[in-house]
Length: 277
Ligand SMILES: [Zn+2]
Image (cartoon, rainbow, N blue to C red):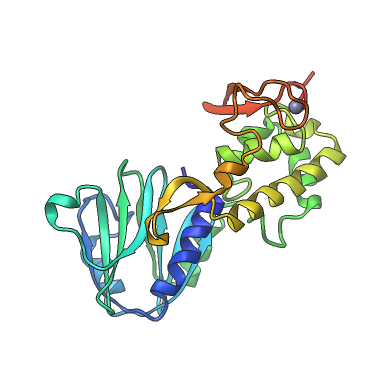
């Protein structure tokens, strides 16, 4: 499932393809592709509008139009990429929808599992209202050690499920939470309020470190970035603990184990990340 670095990679890669192109038409192939907006209303809203920017908020790609915003939530298997031609009907059973652009190219939303959705916000106020549902962006100025200390101290929850909660902090998912907790030597079941201050500071640094590193490497490779010439995200080879069950801990050589926490496969070193008392 794409997390912050993968969605950021998609947004950055699409920017040069999309900026200054106009949307000529919109084709919907999967009836549920649009979230909370009818096909005629969506078509009317986006057609003939120029794309002015491509950004990210939480795990959403935001295509900024002259008037309004198209958001794409990739969810489990969504892929968003430009393509010279829309594939013929028999070859597009994985494609949820497509935007036809003014230069003749297309922006394709492919989604094997069909959980992904396209959103429409008519103005900045609607976008802001939506955006307020999410916690701070971990790579923005609002995410400070002070904020994290204060927020963890005020929570009754265990740290891993809390960090996965998009209302608490935006953009983190299973991979980067496991990576960050290993770096900060915190067991995922530790009650958030019981984490000592020094470790919270380390966790803050760890979250930023793994996200920045992964963005630099175009994310983790379960995403096949077709538009980068089949290039796969380079962070896969850098994973510290995620997916390394059965292999030695990179710090202490103890075997990494896989547990279930909050229904999610969770990778830890039981020596570096001592269980809460
Ligand atoms: Zn270890």
